[in-house]
Image (cartoon, rainbow, N blue to C red; front, side):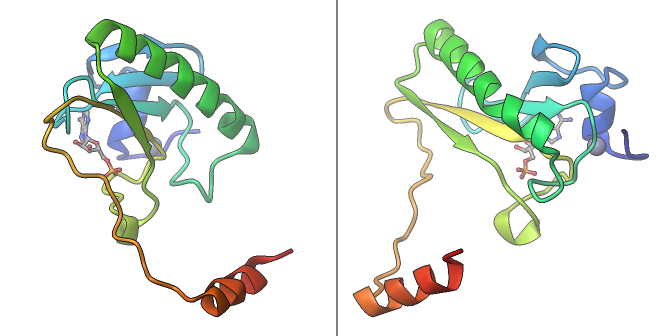
Length: 136
Ligand code: AMP
Ligand code: ZN
């Protein structure tokens, strides 16, 4: 399941070289070419899914165990103090490559990254209204 002209399909399947730190039948984990911090890595499924909305459940259930394994390895080897998992879907959310991927971003003291959100100030009624829109 590959998409013509998708750079991450080509990288994940080895047609374009990458700095691979892990590979199995379904995934390749590579170093990001423009890392946010030292050790910034990307988990790429070898099959093409545009984003989370399109990701198969079968692939989805393997992502978090792999993120945990890679996160542990990166932490042990590089000595980061923590890490952020980031996964962007669609342009509005900052996705620039439309092949599903998960960022592993190691965090260090004074790494000059700021992945903190700006919280909204919602009233209790407004929070209740949002919950009611989503409740199943
Ligand atoms: P996103 O904004 O979530 O779509 O993330 C795309 C990420 O892919 C960015 O962090 C880029 O630096 C990274 N990237 C783009 N091209 C390559 C490449 N050829 N090899 C490795 N990482 C790349
Ligand atoms: Zn692809």
